[in-house]
Length: 253
Image 1 (cartoon, rainbow, N blue to C red):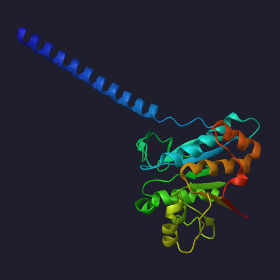
Image 2 (image 1 turned 120 degrees about the horizontal axis):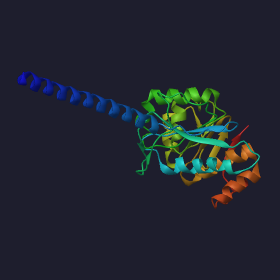
Image 3 (image 1 turned 135 degrees about the horizontal axis):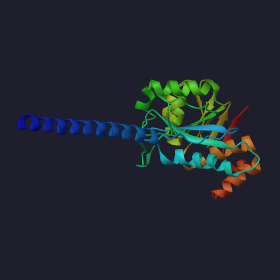
Image 4 (image 1 turned 90 degrees about the vertical axis):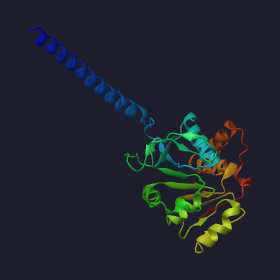
């Protein structure tokens, strides 16, 4: 009888431990899921604004990303205009690392997420926009799809190579980073690629030389949309002297 009682006690302890472990595992799984869901926080997009998506990837150059991002984000502080919602898109949920080493968590994964309608697509330059990125058909197809309905598609520095590879600059005038103009002309001999300008506006496409001059291309788009006073106000907030008449550029009718 004592032996039976002892055996029953052991079985009861084992059962309780097993149940506790199962509950702990379930709790850990739920916690992990909650953490994953919590980490995926989409930006709060306000209605009646332009949705501006910045295409980012490993090797994106800081300036070509942050310059137009700064200009466009500051539109929310200007009254009586249709301001801009700014957010980033990438082909991953994981942080991307810029060329300079900054780690950024994308707002949207264009491969798996349902994206808001994109009014303006910004393609900053990235380290491999002259080579391996141009073989990324998923990325190129994403850019082509967005361009069909976007009001504007802009590139900075070698982001123009992405637009060219996607076929978006056919029959358009464009520019790129000054020292890469000859490379772009060689790769795309049928394109009209201009030197000695900081940006070109042709139709819905605005291509810029990039670098610190990415500010100028972004300010130009703001002047185009909102007028000279708003553009100068945005520039003043970032201590930039802005006068479109002094900027080497080309606007194609």
